[in-house]
Length: 121
Image 1 (tube, one colour):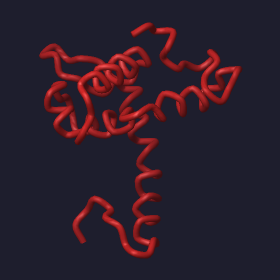
Image 2 (cartoon, one colour; image 1 turned 180 degrees about the vertical axis):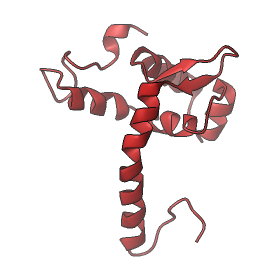
Image 3 (cartoon, one colour; image 1 turned 90 degrees about the vertical axis):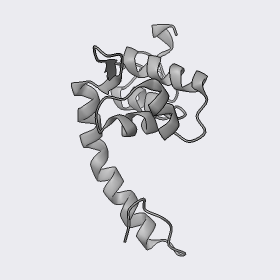
């Protein structure tokens, strides 16, 4: 994966010729499975095989593309055992997504018919 294909602030990205930081983040995080990979890593380091099994239906080629992009973006890295983990920047993104998760749960509860929120009631 060429580092130039990874969205980064200050470089043109989808939706922004100036590469505004928010637009670069949206481009990166809007890629197939990117947020799911980050979400699964929030609990601690995990190997690629286990990560793929947690992400129902993700192909190995997409997984390795996302891992390479998220690594190049500085959101994840590998620990000494070779497992993937969030960096400090990646963990901070997880903290930023907490309010979105809470909003999504309220949205799910407000829809008719009710949909699963991923938690037991």
